[in-house]
Amino acid sequence: MIKVFVNGCFDILHRGHIELLNYAKEQGDYLLVALDSDRRVKVNKGLDRPINTLSNRSLVLANLKPVDQVAAFDTDQELRDIIKNYRPDIMIVGSDWRGRTVVGAEYSKSVIFFDRIENESTTNTIENYINRRHLHR
Image (tube, rainbow, N blue to C red; front, side):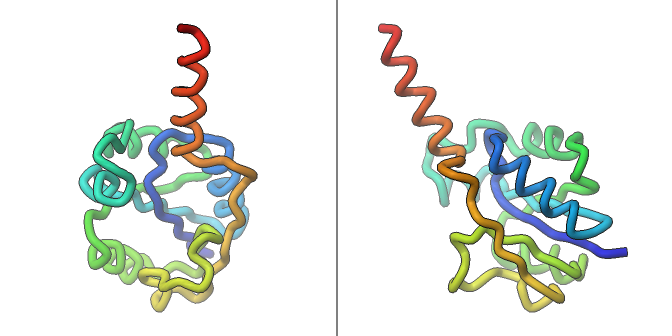
C-alpha cells in the first residue's frame, strides 16, 4: 500500500484544494490529511481566520472521496509526530514551500511539490466575496 500525506488549513474549500486532494490520491492508495488547529490558523492567517472551525473542516474533508483519514495538529512538533508515525511514501506539498524547510519531510520517502491552481486560495475567495458585496450597496 502506498501512503500519501497532505497538510494545510483547508478553511474554505475551493478548486485548488480539490485538485490537490485528487492529485494526492492518484499518487497512492491511502491519503491522510492533517489539518492546522484553529489556534494555529489564527496565528498564521490572521485573527479573523479560520472561517470554519476545525471540527467543521475535519467533517467536510473526511467526507470527500479522495480522503481516507483526517488528523489535526497544533504545533510543528505535533505535525512532525503525525508524519513520523504515519511514515508516508509520498508527501504532497504546495509549490510555495519549494526551497523552504518542510516539516516532517525526513520521515517521507519522497516529497512532491504541487503547483498552485491559478489564483485559487481561501484568502482570494474571501476577498472576492467581500468585493462583490460592495457592488450591491
